[in-house]
Image (tube, rainbow, N blue to C red; front, side, top):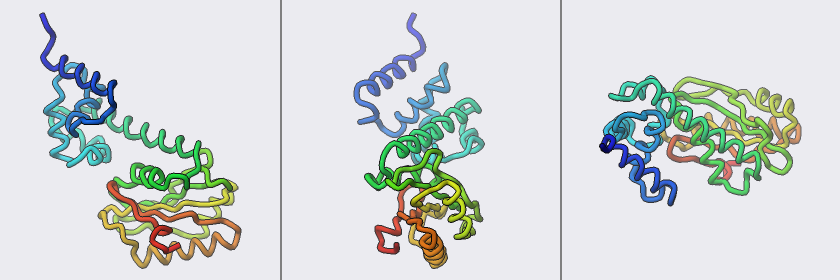
Length: 227
């Protein structure tokens, strides 16, 4: 006797993925494929569609907390934790990949890295990437320096510079998120950036860029002519 009907569907999804990656997959099929890794004995099509209805996109799902994920019917702790593990593994891969290559060789990859790392957070944070003289990311070269309220992170230029000197960095990429999704820099953002640039210049550090990110997009101070 054949197994449950969804076994064949799972197998077809996996075979499609092995042939051509995620090309041609609908969003709900991508989520289904992820859920098959954590839910081995149930049809996952409806939970996948329910997650998309609740969070709007794959990015929204991956940015949700385990508690939020478990508010969706049929998503238990194991599935919620599995999705978080997948997300953090992707972040780790991007970080390690950046450590192997010149950060400035592909600005789009740098934008994607920061969007995935802090773009989906519900509160504002300020982070720094420490670079060597070849603009490569130093080993374990990303640090979260400040967590703020939903609309502001208090950043102190001296703290940024001291952290860079401890790591013997040659350059920095600054990044913070705007949880409201509006990426245009505020006057406070511009003031803080100017203060950090001035403090860095006094000790020979270069500010390569300052990025403002959401889960969907990124704003570059350098591309906008603000650095």
